[in-house]
Image (cartoon, rainbow, N blue to C red; front, top):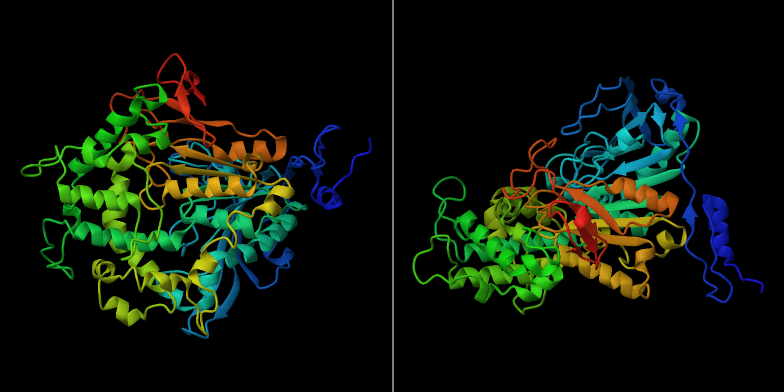
Length: 578
């Protein structure tokens, strides 16, 4: 029987160097997704002369120097970094017609002398704004290696701006931050690599956590033709909504705060840190643990079956209600109302959801959780919302006339939140449009060419909801008739806070998993993760004392859960994904 071949896919195969595998006779005519050919190594041929050798449009190379092996040290990574060429420069220098300031997209690239033939785009967290060391962090807390050490050529950038968020006044700076810096840097970086090594990268990868995870999700939709493997950690997929939800949390906590701020610009305002104390968050975490720990078959201090926990745990009945003074052994009825609201997700006055719910997970007792709810919600999110996620943005004078706390308390979920969807004559693309994928469940380009997407998220992430990411993956499954796992896989990390930390096995290597999937067709069913106990390169001080210093667990491809089989509770080998 003669088979019918999809000629559009065959063209992709011929252009990109993939292996096409068709199903056996009698099966579907739809071809199996292609496997991309493995990258081949190369050797650095140019470094200090790159500024003269590379003819790159709208690009200035400020310096290119050879860094000796061991000349760069990375916190927590004990193996010396290899010899590499450090290139610093900028692209697209311009003067804004709106605020009159000068802008450019600053970058650095690190090109190893012994190159593995791969390119890695390192996406920043936060609101970008600085060119961080281009090493390509692996994943999770204090990774043992990085992309540079593995032989990748790595780029990092400031996404087109520097300094406080006043740059949100410039329309192009907004677009660069959202997605266009990636679009500009990618071809430049590949051209520079070709000049440096005599060939372009065989395989290109993209990775980041937090806002970097958002960048990765956007790249999966907008630049899937440019990247073969994409790694998205704790993705702020709906970042503008998450940022306004932070301001809503400020208002929630202020409603039950028991003390006021004594001095400074916020003197007389409610001290939101008094709303729920560290001891009370620990109580909440302990009660979640007590109700949910055994759901995965092992009482081991880890809640692996996070979905079942949401149905098993009841804030109203599983945490004692105070009948007298708060002493850390109970929560008041008002506290339960506020915490219930926060875990259910932000709402407007009509009760309409403006962001996702959050998981009840023991990691709520982590210090990172309180940091995002109490500190960053008043120090970081107000400026981001005012200048980057609102159209039109605030004026600098108006914003500086208030404080982050006061801005959060005054934010109106009915009238201010919708401004992230607005445009005007100056700001022609809305913050929602430039910050999110154009269609987050349409990854057809990535899928059809054999590219792959790995996503991981801490169950106790306090800023970007892992429940939100779960909903995205379920929607992707629906959009692909249940076949999303063929090109995109999602891993929940129990107990982990934002990108790392918390009572969690938060040290794992996702880059190797991604490369093996892209270039060897080895789809990851699980990823082994370890704790950072005593003797680790960077110790996680929030690990329970009862855990072994070398505890490991499998992180399972969603929706599977790590369930206890038999054996040592400290070993990943004693668990299986079911």
